[in-house]
Length: 639
Image (cartoon, helix red, strand yellow):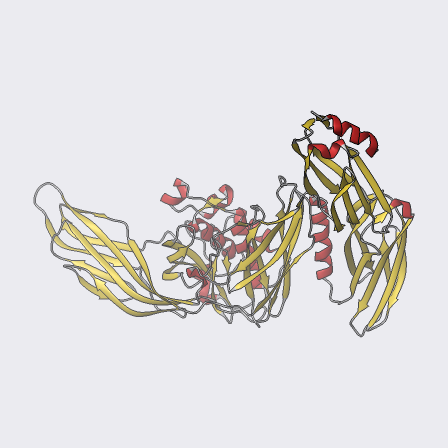
C-alpha cells in the first residue's frame, strides 16, 4: 500500500535580497579609486605646449552621511590644487597624461528622516532653491506632458512625502530599465523617457526630477557609484535628492526602488542640476597639439562592513486561503506596522514560492506608527503529481532585516481556488482593514462534511466585540439568510444559520455589515451526495498458473474523509485504517491457488462521518491455469 506523500516544493524567486548582501549594512568602509587619462597627440610640424589642465569634479566628498577619512591625489608630472574640484596641470609633453584620486570612505545609509507631515503644495519660502526648480536641457519640467503626468500622479494628495514617494514609485513601475544603445551612449531628456517608457538610471532619475520640479518641488541629481546584486559589483549610478522644508535634502532612487533613502553602497561624488553636466573639464594652450580624453574609471573595494540595518517594524503574513488545488490563485496578505515616529518606505520581496510570479516586490509607505497591508498573488502550478501533497514555503524579505514565512499546502485532491475568488477575498480584506473598529467574527460549518441525505445543515458563528462600544443595526448574513444583530461592549454573541443541503464543494462566507462595519468570515463548505470511495487503476494478470504468482494493483480514491476502512481481496482482509482522506495505492501479491479457492473480487467497507456504512466491490477476472486434478475436487467441497 502506498499513501499520499507530502512533498516540500519551493523556488528561490529572487536574488535581490540575498542573505547579507552589501546593501543590507548600515555602513561600509571602502577604498574608492577614480582614475582618468588623456592622450596627447602631436600634429604635423613643430609644436609648442604651454599647459594642459583637467578639472575633476567626480570624486567622493564629505557630507552628512559620508566621511572621507583619507584622500590622496595621483598625478605623475602634474601640479595639483584642491578647491571645490581638483585641478591637475601639466607643462611638459607626454603622449599620455594620467591622474586620479584615492579615497578612504565611510558611507552610511542615507536616510534623512521626516517625522511630520509637510503640506503640499509647499508653502515655505523657496527663494534659496530656485535653481533646483528650473528646467534644463534634459529636465523638461516646463513641458505640458511632464506637468500633466505629474499632476495626474499627485492629484488629491496634500502630503509632500506621499507625493514624492508616489512619483518615484510610478517611475520605478512604469519606466523599463533598458540597456538600449540610445540610453547607454547618451542621456535622453525627460520627454523622451516619458514617451518611450525606458532608460537607465540617468533617464529614470531625469524624469523623476522633471516631474518634481514641474510641481514646485526642488530636486537635484546625485552622481556617484553604487553596488547592485544584478551584476555583483559597483558601477556608476545616478539618483535624486529632494528638498523638504525644515528637514533638508532627502535621497530617492527610483531605479533601485529606494524611495526616501539610499543604502550605504551609494557613494556620492557630486551634486548636479542636470545629469548631463560634465564630470571633468579640460583646458590647454598649445600649438599643433590635440588631446583625446579617455573614460573615467572608478574602482570600489569594500574594506569593512558595519552592522546589519534593522528597522523597528512588525511584519506579519497571512494566507487568505490554504489547501488548494492545481492552478489555484492564492492571496498572501502582508501586514507591516511602523513602530517609529518617522515616515518609513518599505519594499518587501517574495523570495520563495511554488512558482515564479509576475511581480515579486511590494512597495509600502508607512507614516509614523502606521500600519499598512499589501498582497502577493501566488499561482499554484497546474501539473501536479496526483500521488503527492505539496508543501511550499512562502518567504518574504525586505531591507532593514525584514523576514517572515508561511506554509502553503496544495495537491490534486484539493478544490481549485479561482482568480476571481482570490480577487474578491483581497477586496473584502482591504475594506475591513480600512475600518477603525475591532469587531471579530468567526464562522464554521457544524460538521466537516455534510451529505444531501441529511436534508439540513448548520453554520455556527461567534461575534466578539472587545471594545467598550455598542454596535447597533448590524446585519449578519449567510447567502440570502440575514439576521439583525446588536452587540454590546465587551460582549460575545453566538449566531446560527440553518440551510438546506444541495451538493456543492466551495468556499462560503458569512458577512457582518452596517453603515460603519464590514466584516466577514470565510470557510470551506463541503456538501456531498454521499461518501464515495472509488476503486481505480485496477491492474492484474488475465491468467495465472495454479502454482504461479501474481499481483493485484489498485488505487482507492475517497471524495472526503471516511472512517473504519477495511479492504479485502478474495474475502481476505489485507488492509484496515481508522481514517482515509487521500488516495492510496495498493499492491497485493498472491499465489495462483488463492483465487482458485476464493471469490474473485475486491471489497471495501467504510463509514461516513455519520457512521453510515458503505460497501463497494470490484470483480477480478483471473483465469487459473494448469490446475491439478485434486485441486478441482477440493474446490467442489469448499463451496
